[in-house]
Image 1 (tube, rainbow, N blue to C red):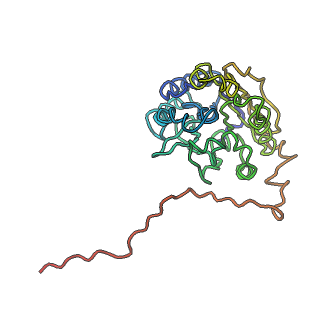
Image 2 (cartoon, rainbow, N blue to C red):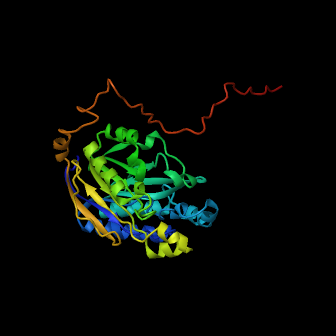
Image 3 (spheres, helix red, strand yellow):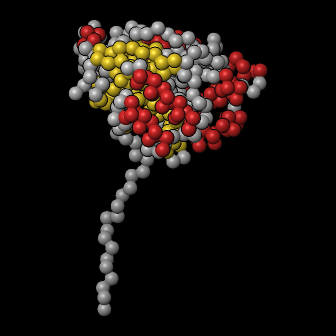
Length: 328
């Protein structure tokens, strides 16, 4: 049975940078706090475990290599001990959790989001379809199976990371799956402040808001903070100081008509943002705009959507059978 009215929570907090174990402990504390606050769903920022690799925007790849080994070592694998702790926290607190984290698989890391239900079961594990700009020096790509919306007890739930909300066709693919509750995870809006409007809070909050308006869906947009300790680690010269600033937290929750549903938390402060969800409101919102329904023209424009999981290796069995040696 789907619950149609409930409270949701979005996290605005700095990560325990490059320390997975401390990060998981802190995540559990925030999950517990959100549950005490009455939330049925809590959403975390992009790659909050163990933090966003800001060094890719600050200097050469050679300079950034000093962080790569530690970043890889503090990535999480699906089903490992750290992952199971998050599942247990979700079950213990009877709350759905969407965690942004660095996923390690083999020798590659991915920008991933784990969707875990209130019994601790994994609903889905998705990867960012296309890492953005400098992110492509760090992360691998997802595939069409990661543009998915899932049936849950809270309604039809989906998630995307960061600038995936700038991709019109990816968004349309999500809208087409009748999404009702969407998690838009962001890392922080503190890089290149004043020098690149595309990376600003104004531009990217607008992307989350437009997603809600176009999709007729609730959007939770959790956003991390860059802490002073992160600045101390990453900013090693005066020339880098204006490139990455403390703060950058601009968490928000939007309704299916695009309206903000909470007061902003100051960008340098940590906190949990709450809002009430009523899935019944979605039908009213879509009465005006439903770009994949009554407001579409599939006879004019349509989307080709390959939802298959990527297969890097396709193994073929031999077509012959070995001949058994005959005994004499």
